[in-house]
Length: 214
Image (cartoon, rainbow, N blue to C red):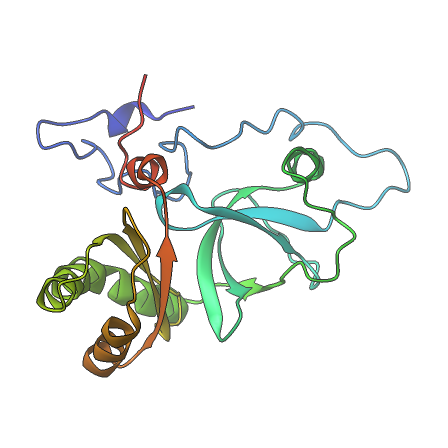
């Protein structure tokens, strides 16, 4: 599925689109499921499955319900429901194969709690999302410095902004339990956003940062 123009260059970046697996076709992403049902038509009278799979930063994927009956295709950028505000992600799977994936991951398609797709992202949505993504590396560096000043035994490995810029999730690893209440207060004051801390294991850290290979 990979596109030939995105082969890796000397600096570790793809030679082609330079998007590091987040291009519109999603063909660079090794974890994308090939939709082998895409060319098959539904039986007469059947309705298309109303859930889609959407990918966010570093291959994080979730399922959303297409309540507005939007015409969605793989590669579409969409605004999705979140706990507060909205997020921006890329459609990676539609149709009956989503039902198979949900069953495989033990997510019931009858659950009312499945969040919704609001709309296809506007250019304003995309610009704001990209602006937030551009700030992540600098904010990660500053958050690490704050943690060191507080002498916390933890490593902040990644930062992921919500698409509307109202919240950032900080992923960290730690050997023992960490009291980061003061760190959250300091970061919220410094960055002016809501903060969520999420502990991950070392294997998950490697996966998020692209450290898993053959």
